[in-house]
Image 1: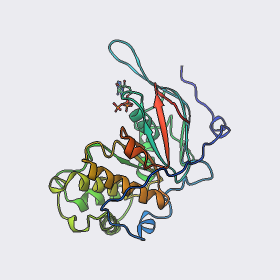
Image 2: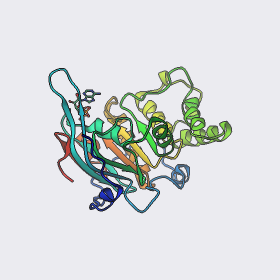
Image 3: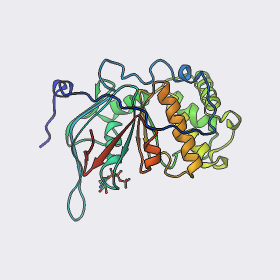
Image 4: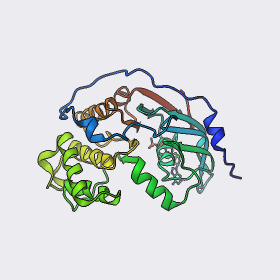
Length: 272
Ligand SMILES: Nc1ncnc2c1ncn2[C@@H]1O[C@H](COP(=O)(O)OP(=O)(O)OP(=O)(O)O)[C@@H](O)[C@H]1O
């Protein structure tokens, strides 16, 4: 049976704070004082006094041929607004499922998920699609870019879908491409870009609608070490400018660039 915790259940539980930044890296991404402006006023703010993400008692079990797979087993997690957390843990411990649940891409069987002060679990698909458009930027391991269209249009399309007029979306897209060191690539298709450039393009796309929360599932997993460090450096800049980021990674080096490392084991948080 599914049990629904009330908003009060979620709100009355303790909130974890951000930890120290543990490491720094350098890479060839264009630095710029305008990044905070480009991100916009909504970035990094859980649009309310509470944490950006608040998860309580979440369970998610998948049907499987042999036996049900208990991917999340009563998981609790808080992410403060402006935090950059790295989620690590062995293969199959539930990291991607956790991201999907935060984004409302997967449902929960039990427990509660709040993002930017809004209850996400138990919503219908239309509500979730709208919510994601305004609050969530998702970065995937294999980029998930539109192959047949230019770098610019890869950004303009989600901007227009997010409610911007085409001209405004184009202007925002150009700004982001400039800031992420892709200003000379606007009319190129993803296929001619390097892996690192494709991932930067995917990050730019995720930022178009000024998301409250940037979620990244193994964003450096398909890149060589230089490309991976570039992406990490970019995340650190975004974090410095107030962007809240939850990143899943297998790499200890990449994880050490986050402001807090959260370890998962057997569908739960191992280190709160
Ligand atoms: N849609 C699904 N249907 C069935 N089982 C699933 C589904 N999604 C995930 N699982 C299972 O749930 C468990 C957790 O999967 P998840 O992808 O969240 O783990 P992970 O920690 O991200 O793993 P990895 O590090 O290998 O990517 C795994 O055993 C996986 O096979």
